[in-house]
Image (cartoon, rainbow, N blue to C red; front, side, top):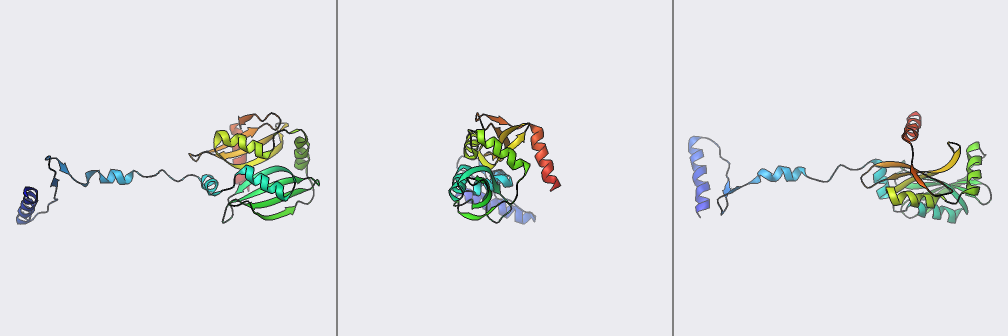
Length: 213
C-alpha cells in the first residue's frame, strides 16, 4: 500500500509542476529496480552467422565419405574428387570417379539423401587424369579415408581432390569448415595417410584462381 502511495504522490507532484515523471518501483528492501539492465540483455545474443561454406556444410546431411560410397555404388571404381556444390538451390555433392572400365565419370548426388541426380561420362583425356590415374595405382588412402582423416581434426569436409602433380608428388587436397566457421585447407599423403596443413601460398593461389573465373 505504501509503495503505491509513493508512486502516486510523485506523479501528482510532477503533474502540478507541469513536468514528466518516470515511475521507479521500490522493492521491499528499499533498492530501486527497473529496466536499466534490459538493453544489455537484448544486445547479448547468438554470434554472427558463419560463412556460406559453414551454412552449406551444416545443411548437408550426407558426409563426404557417405557421398563417396554412394558414388561408387552407382559407378564401381575409385573416387578422385568430391565437392559440396553451393551454386544450386539445395546442397549437392559433385563426384569424380575413375570407373573400372577406365572411363572418367562425373556424378551429382543429393547432399540430403545421397540420391544420384545426374551422371555422365567425360569425353576425352588430359594430362591431369593421366597423373591421377598413375597416383591411384600406388595410393593406400582413398578419398573417403582422406576425408575422415581431415574431419577428425578440422571439422566438416566440403571438398576432396586428388592432385597428381602437387610439388611433383600426388596428394589429397581436403577443404574443411570447423564449428567456428573457419575454413581449412589440408593435405593428406595418399600413401602414408599423414595429415598436414597446406602452405599459405597454396590457399592464396586458389583464391586468385577463383577471382579469375
